[in-house]
Image (cartoon, rainbow, N blue to C red):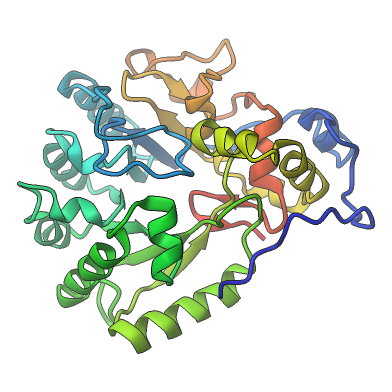
Amino acid sequence: MIRTIPLILDSASPAHTSHGAPFNDTIARHGVSTLTAQTISTIQVNIGKLCNQICHHCHVDAGPQRTEIMSLETLDAILAILQKYPQISTVDITGGAPEMNPHFEYFVKECRSLNRTVIDRCNLTVFFVKGKGHLPQFLAKHNIEIVASLPCYLEDNVDEQRGKGVFDRSIAALQQLNALGYGMEGSALQLSLVYNPIGPNLPPSQKELESDYKKELFSRFGISFNHLYTITNMPISRFLDDLRSNGHIEQYTELLINSFNPSSLQSLMCRSLISVSWDGKLYDCDFNQMLDLTITPPSHQTISTFDFDLLKHRRIATGQHCYGCTAGAGSSCGGSLS
């Protein structure tokens, strides 16, 4: 079984703080009076909430019935920003299932033509949606980095979080990607997996879990990959509803607060990333986007008024959910921070 950090509060921790302590008060005690951005090297684009899955932990509340889809006009506005600001080197495409946006392939090709690194945050099972079977070959052709969700290497755990049959389809998708060179030694095609815990727990050591994943997936299915990212479940949307319905919200909040790790502050993704929602609004991160916690004025708040110089050292909007990124080893969309 995968080891997780359980719902046990450690009052002896040096970062221990009282229940409900405001996040800004906590970081101030560690010498950070205001959390600010340091640059913008990544633009993360949520191109829609439409998804072929309904996952219990999804902070986006994505699913097959969602109709929010980024328009071609907004995508072109992002491409114009990329052309203007070469400092933004990475385009991180997310959703929903980003591939469900009808303009996904156009956007990917245009980003690559601008010589940007492109990340596709893929749920793997989208490859089996009607009309999407060509996606593995398309992604490989354009050298797109794939960050794929696989919350466990055990079938029951994956299907519990993501739906019956998801594990088997995910394994088949990973085998397809390996056959194209993704995740294979000596190949330039990068394949990373994402783990998130089941229930009100923090993820275990990323390094140790990566070793477990590689051993289990290769021995059982012949699957190889480059990296594993461990991500803390955020108390937002469906996962928050699940915590409430099971009576765990207070305990999980305390776990996050009491596990605050000041060494994670320097590497928080919001310090080098800007997030764009499906309707073109700007946020400090994907989590703030889902809470509609917009960019702090005087920075411009939509892609149509994007101002790199105003945004690159902006004050970051924070809240209690920020404890999720700074708990334990810390986590972001790129996994463990320390």
